[in-house]
Length: 377
Ligand SMILES: Cc1cc2nc3c(=O)[nH]c(=O)nc-3n(C[C@H](O)[C@H](O)[C@H](O)COP(=O)(O)OP(=O)(O)OC[C@H]3O[C@@H](n4cnc5c(N)ncnc54)[C@H](O)[C@@H]3O)c2cc1C
Image 1 (cartoon, rainbow, N blue to C red):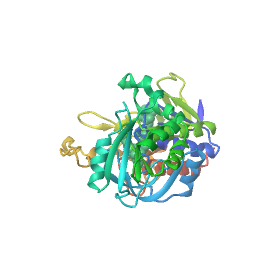
Image 2: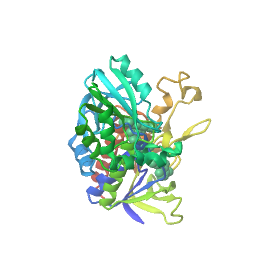
Image 3: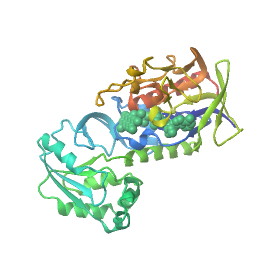
Image 4: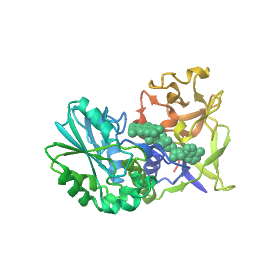
């Protein structure tokens, strides 16, 4: 099987690259073995401060609502964090004192939303809180087993019965000027959070829950659907194992499921994520990139990989594969002509590309531009 580009990893970086190349009429395949960081996504795109038209267009064409406004957002445990470009579900406030009184409403039996932590954090900011739950008969079967009361199980039901949920919440509401709900609405029907906001006579804030993230999985699903609509081949559940490389040029990829049917391409994009997604692995002596054996930047003394103070930024989070300025990967000190590394495999932050989701999107677009420059179609 021969493609213009083969992309390893179907998270945010891999999908942004795949969509952008397909839009240019180039044939691509994405191989993706497992979960990705979007399944844990807060809804805010770190380090993306400008609403760049190219990014806005890409998300809008995939049916993903994003908005830009600088301020702070409420975190799952009642703290606040700076935010700018975010999914439409996420409320951004100029300051953390966004209300006088808040009603925090959970769902009976759903344990991944920590109302009492939220209340503690908000009260520190001078926002008086009251906690309540609502309970809908449609969720009773899930409630019989705690393991089934998870966000992705109940979210599709809530999308159908959101009007009943709103009726319950309106009964609970007294003189509060804000209602805080778990971010588990709009899994399949993206219009639901907006409808809830319109029907509740108070400021409605959707606060993050423990994973899996409903808005994150929805974002992944919509990006994947957009990619496939554009004709991209998404090989879910397959894993790139190794590559055939000759004189700095990658010719094909060996995958777990395709056996001896190698994936050939003119270009390859490594978007396999950081340690979290096994894009990088470690043993007691070194940090490795397992598919191509690329050069990885890391401290030679293992004791320097981490800070014993658990709460501090950890050095290993910044480790990533080495590239040149065009994001061409480096192996054994030599630049690989047609292999680009993008997303969190680049390490925590790059001054010119940012960090987090900003790094994933910007580096994917930069690699696409490099591929387009080569003129190989
Ligand atoms: C838990 C967590 C939460 C985060 N939350 C946020 C947030 O809210 N906002 C933000 O801005 N940033 C966040 N980040 C930073 C995050 O890294 C980026 O936002 C971004 O989503 C990373 O995308 P990626 O495509 O580079 O990697 P990933 O999302 O990690 O995707 C890599 C994919 O490659 C696959 N893969 C790995 N090896 C192979 C292989 N050999 N063959 C085939 N497939 C392979 C993996 O299974 C995975 O699906 C978070 C990171 C983590 C770890």
